[in-house]
Image (cartoon, rainbow, N blue to C red; front, side):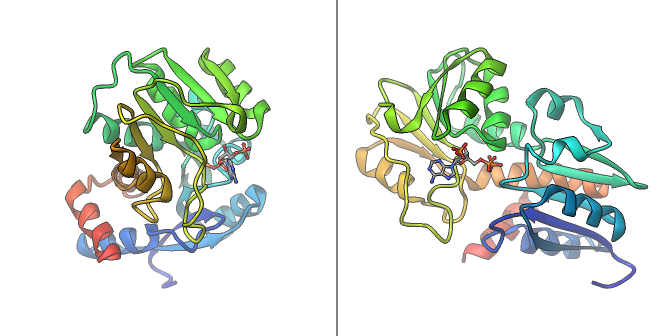
Length: 266
Ligand code: ATR
């Protein structure tokens, strides 16, 4: 990295699929900003926090599996992220590390572009950091939320925080519901031939927050069943635009990051 540039990184594991380095670097370049963005592969929150301080990183985009576990290492936490209990962004202001959650608004905006969420029956697959952010956002709009997760204890903990229902993913059947959202990492590159095995009816909208690939196996199955679909890239771009502002203090037009995203696909 060049010494005079402010450093940012996406942190988590796996990370090789991430489009964030290209999108952020392309946007920094277009806006002529002296920032540089890399990918750091790690599952160790303590290591990555020490690295942020030691190497003076300005910002991190935090991804799976660190979004919940890293919270306790931060100096400060934004009120929305505190309520949610997970973060996806860290900003380093003179060695004071503050966590934010930009997944929540990013996800809700991407869903509301497609459907009216008010009073809808929603099933969330997964109970990790991303599930938390989305579930807390949805809670403002509907009380009919069911959390399904492979590890029952995590589903129970999230359901308790939200005051909603929960069940074990493998034992559950999808009854009538308006929207199913996959927040698990199943089907993400490189395991593109995997999918959570659930059945859905055609009246249901199916969303996958995975954006690599854009059409996951789950989304392909939903299309075959005649369901409406919501793919993950708009949530990804929305949360990145908000993150960009936190890193640089500059409002980036969404179209610039949107364009950069599609450059990585075509
Ligand atoms: P993120 O920050 O992206 O939400 P996370 O906090 O690591 O990532 O959460 C990943 C989610 O994917 C969890 O709900 C996890 O289930 P567990 O709580 O049982 O670990 C889910 N997940 C990951 N691999 C899975 C698999 N093979 N089958 C079902 N669920 C899986």
